[in-house]
Length: 238
Image (cartoon, one colour):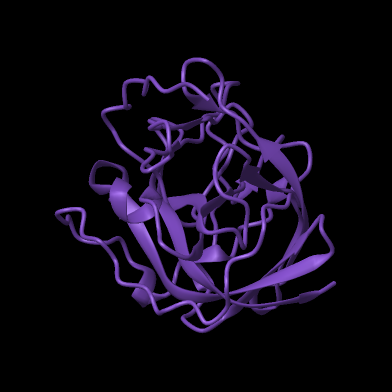
């Protein structure tokens, strides 16, 4: 991982489920050597040039686009379970929105561009392997498509999660880390709170990110990102 942060896209980051999510999208991060913070731009472009937006569920009122903020530091509920050793995640399960998907590993190239999961598999989540693993102390970053050219994808209903909903992540060491949702927010690109989303944490936390908000037909891109904030509450043998 490069210790030289790339230049951030001036538009910032994206958000919740609205229209189309093409495979040419990339995630852009500005990363410090210790991953204390990172800047994500989760974008969706139709490389064919065709305007094929297909619409997505309207997020609940509580998940409406957040007003501009001074990048506040969110206070999460205290973790009720000790952090776990590092282990590769293999599956994510979110019963309340019907998610049950395997993981693929996501990495950045030398310029700080992180390619999203392939859009050939709509039921696939991505984990940024350069950061904390889910359950490990720190901030584990998970990202995935809201939809693809062939229809809704793994995080299509992400904006419908509610505080208290459980998220189970099965790990390669034979454990299941259970996280509890603290909040779900939608952020416009220009007002994306980088430190709040990517800042280091003293306990085991999780961020899940997908595209969403209003789909700009002219730019063929989403205007926002949906972000789920969660913390580790328990673990068990798989």
